[in-house]
Every structure is written in structure tokens, then in C-alpha cells.
Image (tube, rainbow, N blue to C red; front, side, top):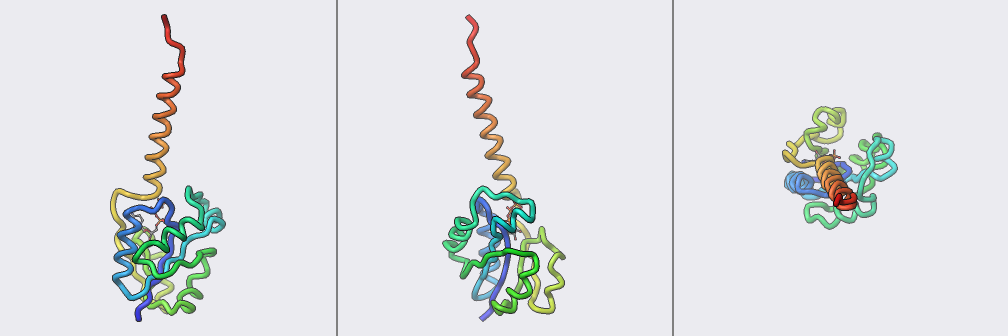
Length: 146
Ligand code: CTP
């Protein structure tokens, strides 16, 4: 039984997340995901659109995910690996090199990200649509000259 462990925020769950989780699940028999809590994101200076309970529920509904645990601190990874019996610790390659110190406990793997999609892009896109709509409404509301 090979256990894979990964971490992330997984806000506005998108196809980049799906593909990463699929590839991670193919590395072993069980995939455990540490999902960042809202409090931990605040420490990281990150604000999510979707609250923790819903991001966790979404991950739990993903067929590639066996179980979701909360990620509350930077330091918990070593104890999580030991408690969960993780054989592989894996992240997207935006984190390449960051977790090499865990190699004494598990195999550390970085997988390539899916290109051209991220939560940040989705937020920018939504904001652009919103601004466009505001401009349209302002235009419609401005007095017409006779
Ligand atoms: N990920 C990926 N491909 C993407 C986006 C994310 O493989 N296009 C991976 C990340 O490398 C990470 C996991 O998905 O291992 C969770 O990433 P997260 O930071 O939650 O997603 P992002 O879309 O990168 O969010 P943000 O733009 O806020 O950084």
C-alpha cells in the first residue's frame, strides 16, 4: 500500500487541480490532501473566495482523493508524513526544491503544473468581467444629451 501526501489551498477548484490530483493518485494507492485552512492562508497572506469547509468538501468529492486533512502550519508536514505513513510527498513544481529536507522521511516528488490556468488567473478574469459590467452600467446610467 503506497500512500501519497500533498498540500495546497485548492481555491476555485479548476482543471489544473484535477490533473495534478489525478497524476498524484497514479503514484500510489491512497492520496491524502492537506488543505490549507482559512487561518493558515491568512498567515500566508492569501485570501480565498471559497471557505475551508467547502474547499475540503470539494476535494473529498474528487475521485482521486482518499482523504483530506487540514493544513494549519508550515511545520506539520513531518508529523503528518509519519502519522499517515506517507511513502511519497508530492507537490506541483512551483514548489520545486522547497521540501527536499523531507527526503529522509519520504520520497519527495515535484510534478509539472498545468499551463495557463491558476486560481489567480480565474480571480483576475472574474475581476475583469466585473469591471467591464460596472463600466457598462455606468454608461447606461449616465444622462443622455438631447
Ligand atoms: N497546480 C497545478 N497546475 C496548475 C495550478 C496548480 O498543478 N495550473 C497545483 C499546484 O502546483 C499545487 C496544487 O495544484 O501543487 C494546489 O495549488 P494551489 O496553489 O491551490 O492552486 P493555484 O491555481 O496555483 O493557486 P494560486 O494561483 O492562488 O497560487
